[in-house]
Image (cartoon, rainbow, N blue to C red):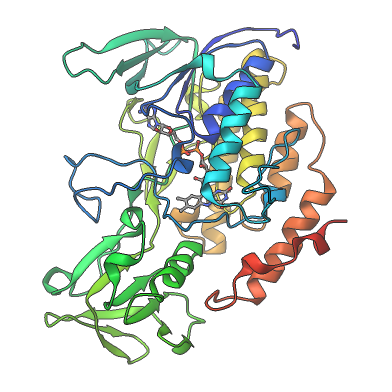
Length: 436
Ligand code: FAD
């Protein structure tokens, strides 16, 4: 183990991919780690749960929340060559076969193997939900209180003080649902993809799927086997009405939802629909975090965060891992975690608070100038490897392996050319031709 310059007692919130890797990196830097995990198992998103919530749109604040948003048929949307860590490749087999695009069970197994091989299980307090995270009295104080509750309703909440907190609670649980024109009086059923598991309940139905990401296409592929019709709706300007397969159509944005159950699209089509299924993404939420307004979520921008990780006014003792997207997620999480571990041990210095705030402001201004909506603030599209190289070098490592960059770039190029992904799956791609 590297001798740390400063060893801190660190609370990690969540034992999904981000929490597990963060714990490993913190330990490597000599920090003392406790992971708080509200579930009984590790894996977070990758722990498939057949249960769905009582409110299919996920709006009722009193519903029992199901964490994972995975559907049963889900396979990764990145090839396994991009689903490992820098020193721990993804080699989990299913029935003796190494799949290029593994299913969720293989990913969960991979994470379990990782946690076992790096001794992470001993650090986790399962069935323990962090309900309040707050800096102890006063601005200069670097002590953080973590209040948590266990499974037992009769037991009182407990608190413990830490020297730093790393938040790894995930951001694919709280549905984001757009308000479609006329939807209040629309006659049909509505559901968010968070509560979609299997296609059978949709047998014989006419389903409108809102969204244009991998989930919208995966779920439509699932649905078209049993549904009467599937109508995909995208708000992208490039989309024209088209028939994608026997019973799947692509449409533009929804124009209006009528009381009689019809859904009108801006391309002029009118469809008598039974169900609207929203594949419209998720909201960032930190109900446990009390920072007196220093960290805010505004239209899905969590900020201000220096490099999407440190709130300048609370750095380095509070940090967030895994907020960014449109990326090679596992590697991104690993490099973010390495940087945080190095900064906490004092091996890597952060700029001054003012410089971090200025850098963050500049980032926001750049987004605005490019016309990037606020809710895309944490997207790494087009800048991912620049960002990952920077993180890695800041954490004392080297730029990301050229082979990873090459596979990713070729892969993205190929899937873009086979969009929309109905009928032909990008998962049939021969990834080996991209490996140098
Ligand atoms: P999570 O996996 O969500 O883990 C967060 C953990 O925190 C959970 O275990 C949760 O129980 C715990 N937690 C939350 N709040 C508290 C609290 N207050 N106290 C204690 N514990 C708490 N990524 C890929 O790389 N490839 C893919 O193919 C891919 N496909 C995806 C498909 C879908 C449908 C979705 C939704 C996501 C997909 N992702 C994919 C992204 C995926 O979310 C990440 O791979 C990864 O799971 C993120 O890990 P995380 O640890 O940040 O969050």
